[in-house]
Each structure stands twice: as structure tokens, then as C-alpha cells.
Length: 373
Image (tube, rainbow, N blue to C red):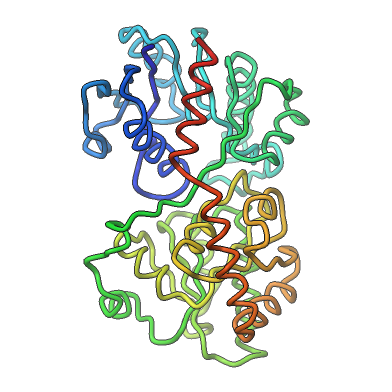
């Protein structure tokens, strides 16, 4: 069987990029029989090594572009794949050969707000309409749909009216690797680079509106006001429009909040390993990988109780109401002060990580490929 995978989003970062990276890495580890065609861009070409049954094809087409709709299908057709895996919803509308699609979430249906884009309202409206058309085509025409959680599966069934029997849940897992943990960067380097001078609470991820960082910042200001200034809040994420907007609302010297911007994998190792607490205030997630990565580094986690997060994190997190600044503040303070809770979370976190495996995820995905041919 010849299987194609759209790897244009593959990267060592977090989110979709990490999902595709880990899928390919672990398929290479477990499958020597099937042939794979990996469609990569120039900027991530070196992220994957070719092997006897894994071939790379340059596909330098931007995501969500007109070229994706008009040129991607032709490139895939040249490789004569038996099955294509699109690890995101951006499937060309003209693609009708057998394919599998992974749906990570349906955020666009629950947060369809113009303020969630840097474009004009008219452009947002048009983009949103096309977006919905493409995702509906993807789930309706797919041979199988992979959902990243039972929550997302239920959301797809309810929102897009897709048969439950067509959807298979495959959980992700944090990237746990001894070589990855052995960072060449020291914690002293991190402290110096980012001006970290005190114990800190960590967040890793984007600053999109549904990530709820505005409330987290307000909760942090309340935390400093009520409980003193013994901690810093470290926010890790590429500085885009949304992070710049978040930073603009904080006056210089007003609060002990550090914006690191993009952090490399080696830097993330040190940032995770030395955090006192990880906080995840999101209003909506399809899975939620960063808090699991924090658990894998032995960091206690406090999280929003929204969407899939209780399903994914189980009893390895203490939950708060993401709409309540006071509740976010109180939960952070409670876990930072209570060593018994921290010990419980670390123990439960280790058990939760054992239940999740990227090898198991790749194996489940391979079973889905086989069922489609």
C-alpha cells in the first residue's frame, strides 16, 4: 500500500506541527512494509530523513492558499498513492480519491469572531465561509475521520452531522525522549536570556482569543495584589499579532509577566523542567498537549475545566472556571502553596503519561489506513 501524508505543517514546535512530526517519526519506527510519500515544504524539508519506504516530495505550497486548492491535487496525483492522509482539515475541494482526515477541533464554529483575525471583517466573513465549506467537504468525503478526543468526536457528530461510526479517536501523547530532555542549554542561560529571577508559573502556546490569556493576565495581576510578588508568570509563544496585543495591555513595570517569544526545543526543556506550576486557561481545545508535556517534566498542572481538558488530563490536574478571574487566581495560589496537592498531581501525572503513547497513536493510525484499503 502506498500512503501519502501531507507534511507541509510538520515542525518541531507545538500543536499541528508536533502532531505530524510525531506521527511520521513513529510510523517510521513501526512500519517497514507500506510505502509512504511525505509531501514537505522547503522550510521543513530537513526535518525528516528518507528511508527505504519513506520518500520525500517537495510540495512548496502555502497552507490555506488558492495554490493549495489548485496545485496540491496534481502533485499528489503524480505519486499514485492508494490513500492520502490530511492531518488537518485543509483538503482540496477537488480531491476525491480515498483519504483520511484528522480533525483536531471545530474552533471556527464556536469562536467565529472577527477579532480572532488580523484581516478586515469582509475578508474574515469570506475566509470563514470558505473555511466551513472545506472542512465540511473533508469530513463528508473522507474514508475515515480521526478525532483527537471523544469531545472532538462528539463535536463533529453534533455540529457537522457526521455518522459516529465514521470517526475514530486517536489520542496524542507528549514528546518524551531522553535526548530531548538532555538540553545543551543550561537553566542559567534561560534565566539570563529571559530575565527570570524568581520561581515562575508557565504557559506554553498561542495567544489566540480562545486561549483566554487576557483573563490569565488579569488573574495574575490579582494574584500579585492578594498574595505578594514571589513568583513570575512566563508566557512562551511566537510573538504574533495576538501576543503583541496582549503585551500592549500591560504597562511597563505593572506586573511580573515575562513574554519569551518563540522558544527552541532546547529552551523549552529548561523552561518546563524548572517551572513551579503550569497553567492552561483555554476556553476550547480539541486535545491540549502542552499540559501533558508539562506533566512529563514533573510539573504540577492547573487547567480550565472547559471542552476536552478533563477528559485528556484526568485526575492529573486541578481545574478552575476559565471565565472567573478570581477562580483562576485562587487555584494558582492554592496549588503553589499546598505541597500535598503538588505531590498528588505529580504522581497522577506520571500515571497519565504512561497511558498515552505516540507509538500507540501511530499504530492506531496505521490500523485506520489498513481499514480504508
